[in-house]
Length: 98
Picture 1 (cartoon, rainbow, N blue to C red):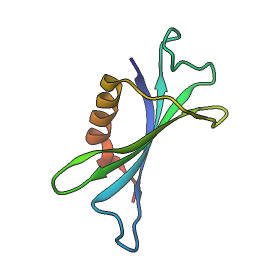
Picture 2: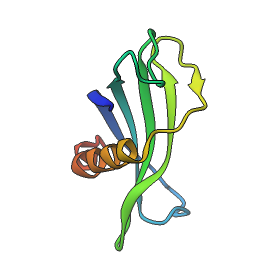
Picture 3: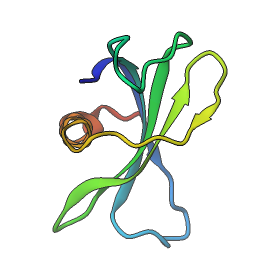
Picture 4: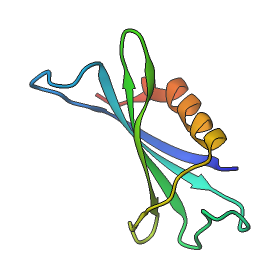
């Protein structure tokens, strides 16, 4: 299971009104156990695009990266991990700096 150790969140500006709802970009620093397939000695973070609309909120997209190298990792989170990230984003999108 992942553990979110730090985060940043920013409102994604949409000056032309193309996107529906309000979008936020999260950068979640995570800690995973060494025996987890996601584990990296370089550390990991998740970049999440999160949408808040009138009728729904949720993850639009997420990507995993090594923290020190910035290298993209083509891996998926497990269902319960995605649910935990979604709940975290839902609870914290209001912390964004506009």
